[in-house]
Image 1 (tube, helix red, strand yellow):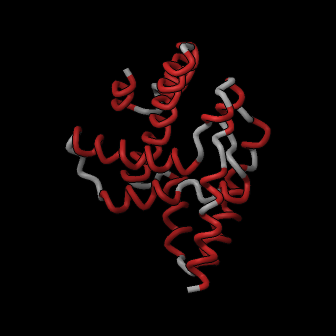
Image 2 (image 1 turned 30 degrees about the vertical axis):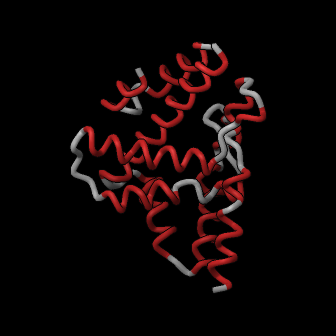
Image 3 (image 1 turned 60 degrees about the vertical axis):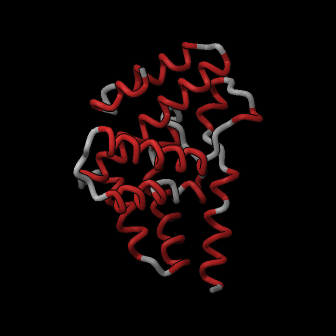
Length: 172
């Protein structure tokens, strides 16, 4: 049981880790999205998309992948796309963190599934990647409405429209 509690303490850090890209876009500090919020909304939107588009995916695998795809951020924090310098070592740094967490709970599947997401080697991983990008676009739309600043949405929409595939229509 100690392993599970120690795992809980580690993953709980995602509640306090903010998505730093919003800071650079002047979203008020009291309403920054945490990594945990990102994961939750991404999971719920993904379920709706799978249903709406009648996708033939392993839903359990998709949900597990969504839940663990940000585990590396426990150690390295959120590294936004625009932070080019820090992104150079992002994979290696996050790999260390995910390996540590996987070993902490003695669950090798966490690392295996995270690597599958990173390499986009399955349909589920490709879908989760698209949902990750779509999640940022939807969050930008939400913040744009909240802040009455459509430029924020337009920036994210333009940057992600080719990455989200047919799902980008959801943001309009």
